[in-house]
Figure 1 (cartoon, rainbow, N blue to C red):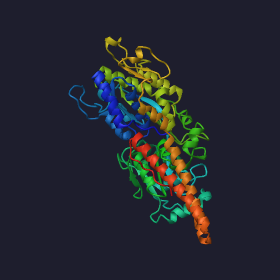
Figure 2 (cartoon, helix red, strand yellow):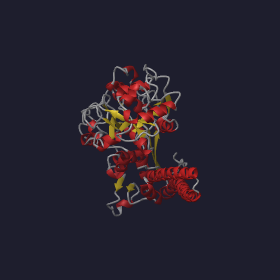
Figure 3 (tube, helix red, strand yellow):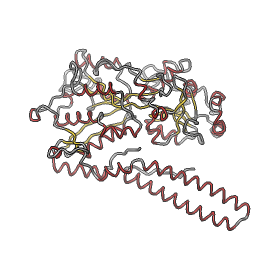
Length: 521
């Protein structure tokens, strides 16, 4: 299911009304990984829709490495703080890789005399997968199969054609399609890879090394190849920025291969590679998720003893299990323990705390499962919740709030299933009872776009069949048959274009983006 941000027009109108009533706008800002960005945007949009006070929650999807950089604030200075460094640029960071141990230590040494001064709050599990755009290849267990060594050789420029004998040896069931695309691609396989620091790059390069050390050396493992002493990508690879850029690289180049977070690939209807896991099973990440193979991967690696501990060595790559997906990532929120120093406004700090709590609330995170995300194991969720409430030897956050509110968070929830009489109308209540027509429309329409695309493809198939019939009748000189076929073809064509027009309207006016439907060929 696709969940899109609220339209700018209606949000502006909603915020305008709230400002007139309350005279304040409460803001929260974060940045980091692109993988769970749709999940985060969805939750933020619910907050802005359900708040009486005007709220502005934003998240910049810039990649895990940039998110860490902006959170750590190395060499950033602020005259109001001591020491004058490690001042975060945002209220929180987010990433699919933990903060490296060296950076974690440097932060603690500079800001808290070596004691821990940050939390990793795990809130989602997801998968990174390889996708391709080879025409005619099924997008299921009968699709393209590649083990780690074949993938390594493709990304290292050693295999350049889809009809290479090494590929055909494990893909004789689609040899015709592979041979055809190879003949149509004189420049060889279009190999797409991410630019800048990316948790997706860190994860796939880690997998290639762990599963095929002979073909993918440790010098090519990291979030940004070519940086910090790492080897460069092979010159044949093509740079693509962000998950959106990777999607475009795949869609615009038949016979391409690349990698991105699975949920994004599924939502874009990209064809997935069947990757071989540690138990030698070929499967897609979607099949692994359905069999519990994504959540199961997290069960093989115990978390640190403390939520404010060093998570730098935690990873879920190439774990055992027949149905286990080999490239699983955990999404974290990075948060400073001295949060009151950098979020000095009590109301903003309270909104931030409630937003973080929503990441573990089914009323808010629940929709994220439709975007391809899974909950971490219960023991990890319990650690994160404890960390948000300063449990267990002061390892979590100690939130401070005004005496006027009993030193408790002034922000709270009202669920859509349980009314809080009088209290629910409070100034700082995020109420599931308070919705907008646009919000209801998104909940009702979300997912229909995919159904429409499927319907259009079926119509296109029928049109192709009618064209074959029409050509046959024309060859045989059957005029009556040609007229009938032409009428049927015309009716199908009209229906198809009406569907395209309706789809464009849905995207343009409900989803707030340009329509991009194309007639399938």
